[in-house]
Length: 73
Image (cartoon, rainbow, N blue to C red):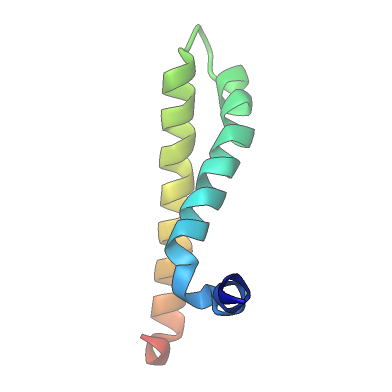
């Protein structure tokens, strides 16, 4: 029953879920980044570039929401 209440109140656990989804997207997009970059990029560099891009995108969306809906914050 305790697990059910944790699933229902998922708003408290948004940060771990967000990090998990970010890492999943990173695993999916890193091979595409590695294929597009010219030359021979290491796998670590591809994952790092993809993670940086995803973090930048998330920050842009967050700032867009903060600018246009400041009353929520």
